[in-house]
Length: 137
Ligand code: FES
Image (cartoon, rainbow, N blue to C red; front, side, top):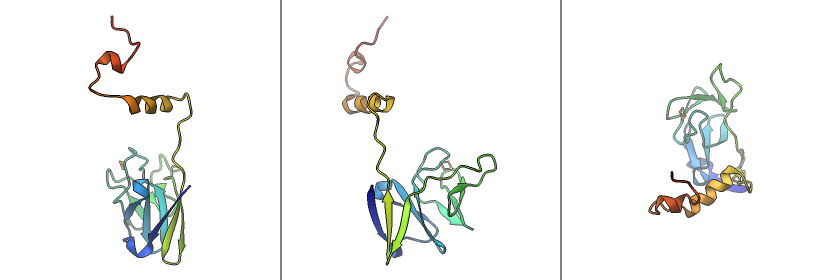
């Protein structure tokens, strides 16, 4: 877990503000402060800069809408879908956010394999070096 602290007065009202290196956003309204993972359910783009109107958070990219405080998608087709939340509490004049640890790749998983390849990949290597064992017929 990672703890992030932000002064309440530093948060503009009715706008999603990125915190913790852009991993989460805080949304301050007249009713409270809410925290979400900084990913829209539409195309996984960041919610940073999203605005709130009439209790609805509106993604800045393609205007998908999420009801506050749950972050429930305003769509009948996917009414059960909600933004991922992060734990937020207000202590004195600070917003304290408890961020989950980033997911780690399981050994042997495709994700682990791709991360390992990305660490050593060099675009200037000849194709045979990039794909050892690949056949060329
Ligand atoms: S990425 Fe949010 S509406 Fe498209």
